[in-house]
Length: 262
Ligand SMILES: C[S@@+](CC[C@H](N)C(=O)[O-])C[C@H]1O[C@@H](n2cnc3c(N)ncnc32)[C@H](O)[C@@H]1O
Image (tube, rainbow, N blue to C red; front, top):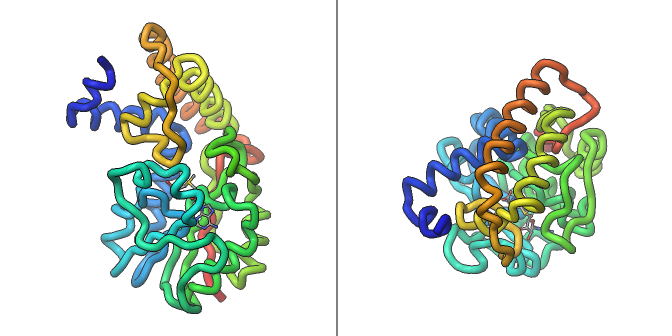
């Protein structure tokens, strides 16, 4: 019944908009990408692009947008590999990016470093294909539930990200935290309510979310939704207010770093 309703484009669009706002990690990420996008220009590379969900944010500023993916893991997880959606332009083996040195003016990599067993060589590869003065926007989780298992290997501090950039010939210029203590707590509580209690994973995927996770087979406990949905909305609202009122600089869901190629 709910899946049928979500088949109607206006219902799906409204549900997705609300779900994006409730999702404390996603909403911050989109805000920050919108903020950094005007700094991008020329040829852009999205490393570990998945379904290229952020392409629309950058296309007003860049001349071309190339999405590259690791063939093995992409085929396993991403929804466009299961049919529909924007596919990557290039698939590769996950080791040497199939581009010449200094090919791109800017690059993006969102929630990829935790999914590769060799993150440092991957950042070096991003540095190699960037032109001097080119910008890399790198996003990785600090405190986030296990996802895309078993391909979920690491979590990152802002200092670790800056050090990896340095070793790749890049200098971290800006660091944005994605939420503070209350967003971390709120996100974990909402993940528990939505996924464990109400088993909404499949419903979220019908809505176009969780696209890079394997198809979930669990049946939503629809009888819990009248309680769980308002609770999730309340948790998200409270987390935003509390993070604003009492920010704790030692906590965050993820960090986003903007680094320049030296
Ligand atoms: C959590 S998904 C993120 C996808 C997309 N960036 C997004 O934010 O929707 C992680 C992606 O990283 C890809 N990945 C893992 N190792 C990679 C590597 N060495 N090179 C490129 N992509 C890789 C996986 O195939 C997967 O699609």
